[in-house]
Image (tube, rainbow, N blue to C red; front, side, top):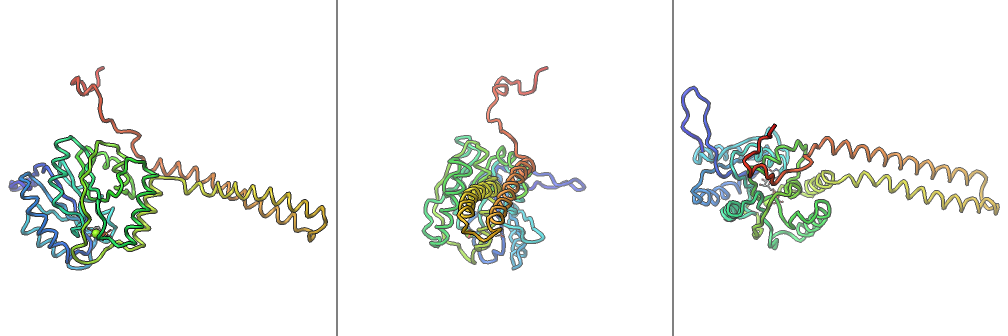
Length: 331
Ligand code: UDP
Ligand code: MG
């Protein structure tokens, strides 16, 4: 909420308890319905809040609509991207710009029911949790294709991040200020929050909800964007694909040895064309050496990548010095 501004002074802000971040891309049909349902819920909480609507370079009437909403709803802040940069980028901008002690991210199409926000907030406050995941209990309204691809995605991601990642937890979640600050400390280029948040390992809880049907408009996640998200997720958390070259190189090396034995025997028996054996073995050998060298380069590239990501090596959850009232180092 904005305070009354003093002339000549920059506008002062009080810290709202809750920020609700909404990535919005070409949602002219869905947005008014979302606002209509969200506003009474947030007003009913009787705490200070703000809504950060991030317009991800919409090309329809969404920007005009957002201005209109803002005139009528002072708690609704708008951030506008110059061009479409993707759902995760819009989430990043919203989370980085939110002022609240708690930050909830929610889609603009009412697939995530906003009625769960009060539950998330009270769970986090009562149990001192840093993360509350919205877990999709029922995806009956999603298409068969979406359910299958999502099922495979979560299975693979749980292999990469481990069981800490709740199954079927999307981008409807609550983060505490501590979790937001930890995420902000990571200069990741393309953060994938549904993996990065469980990776933090902060105390977390879950709120189960039913994934509803999109209220209006159509999905902005075509197959190409789903593949992009899956690729970003894998490359963000694993250097294993780089290792593929090493394994292929080793495989062709063993094939090379087997073929060397075979062609030598064939040569001894005189059943080959002159020059075939040496040419064949040479070709396999060079192929194997090249693949192994590429794999070796991959190992170094993987290390450079992880250094560039510069993720903190650890997050301290508890330090007894804080209890002793001596968090400042004693010299
Ligand atoms: N979205 C976005 N940028 C994009 C695509 C989507 O900000 O490039 C927003 C969209 O407006 C919605 C949320 O991200 O609020 C989820 O997108 P969508 O509902 O299309 O995905 P689905 O629910 O079908 O996976
Ligand atoms: Mg949706």
